[in-house]
Length: 518
Image (cartoon, rainbow, N blue to C red):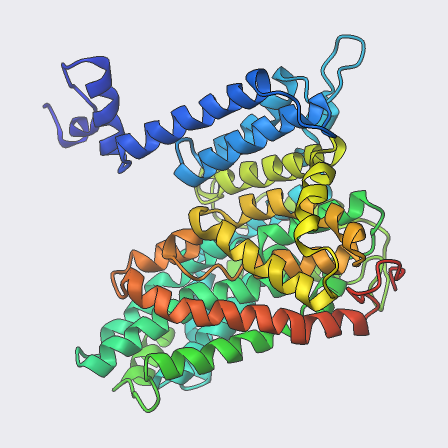
């Protein structure tokens, strides 16, 4: 080879199968899993769409959407195709299968790409751009070190609580839990490197990584509307069904108690890993040193704070907030925020630098997931599936129904990596099912889909956990032993705390006819 970079190009002289296998191996993918998933996805797609008889009560359009749903699920689980490409392929398949009726021989492009035109998607894009600029400015590291320095983090408990508040702040600035996990990883690894290698210190490292990079990032995301992509999927579904006033402020208010969920996980993790009394020798001094090394804030950082402060005020003062300054929807504010971010000379970065740090794959995944949610509702597939599922809980009380559905959701999530994809499939079914079991559709959907976020049994269920697992700090068994109790705590928290809290704000899950209070 002429140079080192040429080594990455596959020069295999074998057959086509060998060539493809070596390409996949060089990309870190298992050829067997990837091609097995790819073949299974397309095989079941054609089987459902073209061979299997139409089930009773399901329209042909619903059958086509079911084929696309199965195809997307397998692609997402096996990652045979990048998740973003699977997302953008959903509208394509909706057109090719005519799953949504054509108009005078023309495909309904506006409907099949509706997921990419919702306000939630543009709100998300602003958050992605803002997150990219924050990372370029290294403000994420400054925020993390400033909080840890301020609370004088010197033992495991303080470190973990400090990283939780770091995640809360970053949830306003950086969308997607996986992006936050990747952002805080260098800080977390720097802290764990200060610890020694005694048995207790090794257990403490596990607690710090799992709590700071997984539990904290997921719980903080539920609290902030733009901090977790499933939030946007659900609000988009509610908006199309007439529940239009669940804005940024109302979302925070409705999910405020979830901050307390972290205290429960911290209690269990502290007990399980026996971290009580483990002190990080020189921990605060090292954090303080690193914080001081960053120096004073630059003009660019102050400019970023000003932009986000302005847009944040607009987010908080729209329709449904205690103080209303304007009537614009969140997506419009997000687009205005994008225009402000790219005022010439405001930041010292070329477009390519921002572009390279923008998580376009998640953007495409979100748009495709919202499209799938909409298609499932319009084609009647969501209602048909709800008819079959609600039989399992027919005659049960509201809390029993929640318990069964929450446990069932955790079982279904064992084989799926993407929380976004899971909620995209689950939300329309649960929303359609609620009236059939006599429960409020918004409260029921929130309770079930939020518990989906706490899929803590295997690291492969959440991208943030995959990132944390990549640190090599804990094993799969460590994660499972800690996680199964946290799942049960989340279910109990949803039924005993969140359901009454929603009722306090006008969304009693046990009353399907309760009007939206705002």
